[in-house]
Image (cartoon, rainbow, N blue to C red):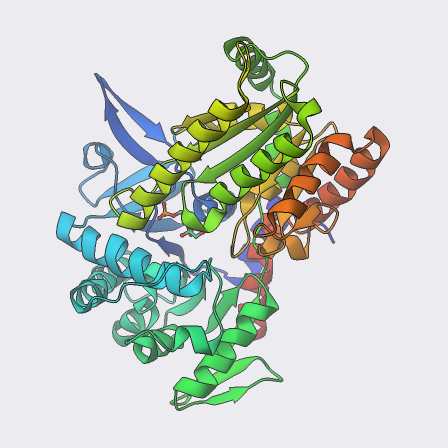
Length: 490
Ligand code: F6P
């Protein structure tokens, strides 16, 4: 069965009846920023918000998140709420305010310098700092207070997102045991050997086991989690039911591969403004009939951006006939820039782009065009449609929605996806050219294969990729989670 927005709405009506539906995440879906003399509303580069926004548009309810924009306070009411999306308001965004120190300790510090590298096997060591951990705990309580303000004593269904809020479910239930919580962990869960170095690992596991349901993208991450719990916590792990019983409460642990709103992206990609933007890009960069490659990423060391540049370098060296015939656009959204590792990554990328371009460029051509800025959804769709090939070369990635967005936007059934085997998406998108981003020579061959792939083959593969995303769309993801909770008799 193909899931639709209407199908999800129906399910919510019948299963959640009159329960309030609340989503909680660190990142907010709409950020208000001051620019010159107006307030702009920006959509962040975030897989999580791309995925959850259509669900909230369908279900309504309240989304509680950190208000991180410079003009966020100016647009909320006296309860810190604002209706979104700005073009067709249909749910409430409740903003949580954090001080700079709280943001530093909880978001930059514990979430992104400790948990992020701990869960992604990308060979960046985590930094465990007790002060960050204490702030993380305090901020989880701040979020819990905001959730409780929104849900009161009701039997709400609270859907918690990601690794920033591992302690939240227990904090909420301590004050309102009627609340049902599900949590989705958007990043990989590592094997127990990797996880056990976390000094507060037991508290994190215990916090997550406060949920009725815990979701990961793929079965492999669920199995890693169950095995970690079995080794580190006193509890009963039921592998057959994929559940953990601890202190009399049960948490079901299941895979739910996240996705995108396939039809909405396809519709938006076909809009006249996207076609005009494609023309604008061609004009701006003086493009002729070169093969166009794209990479669209948050600038993060897990995305394998230097690895893809090294492969492009190899490709151009080995197949010089493609010099002046291929242009690669790297579109990079700055991210977590106050963390040292991210600063180092930015410097490495700048150096590599400069070095590769210097090596191959001619009077009117250079192989890599690096755009390091926030781009609008229209511009990103235009690049997706212009590309002959799109590279996703993550060293480790829970899912990767850039790959699914690329596929959804290709209503022409053309374009080749080059995709790292180390993404959750590779389990579903098997018609992509799958690769190991560390294997530079093979990577260079994959670029050649993408460029040389005959049209009929491109079409056949893209058609299958599109079928996979259309079927496993975001409404199926949300619907499966809600159905699973309903099966539990909650
Ligand atoms: O993919 C993991 C993730 O945390 C998402 O949940 C989020 O959308 C993305 O990374 C962006 O990160 P941040 O919110 O730190 O900008």
